[in-house]
Image (tube, rainbow, N blue to C red):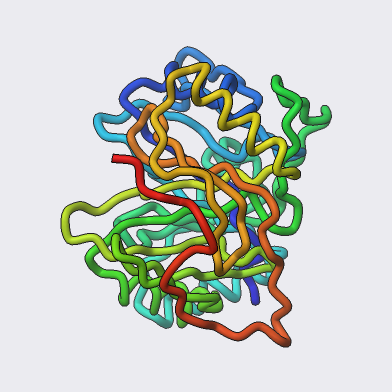
Length: 286
């Protein structure tokens, strides 16, 4: 596997200030305000990386950029060749773009769901320690920032691209009454990206922020009541990745999953299966 982890995501939202407040007060991310002329209104930090998410103003809410970290410059070159051989138009990131992402090198292309997809190496880590305003510890490290799940009518094309071109494994499939999900991983995290078939619209389903304990999940659930945040799905436990979690609606309309206890995949023994139900909970909230 050449891609190591989910490095960062860009988020578009009609109200970046509201999203920044939600990130700080409900999720527990550290928020940094952008410069006045900077299209990035806020940068959001959850570990030693300078930021894992950023917020720009957009008419509709959703992920606008997905950034995948690779091991080094040689791996970046290898992935670039693989993409070009597959007919993908790949562009080298400019010096200014690399400074904005705080990386040594980056390439970008249009990935599934029309999302700008970036591969980068040499992330510049922050000098200061991450301190959550709510005292939350997030599970990142070699598992990356979490996972992102996208909706699309072209599920098989997206899965084929991530598996056959980018080299992800198909961890599992879940065939639920409300949709069929395909989970793809690139490190010990069960999945770093997933796709669900949707004929109504295309875009972002949710982003996972994994915390270290079930108690932190419960505290986050309490904060949804305090700040009147609408739930997408009730507290529950997934059968495939073992995540104890709930889903809430972010100010941009897509979901945020707060979870703990996700399984880690052993590549030598893992078997991909199809699930039809969770262990308990995760009931959709109308």
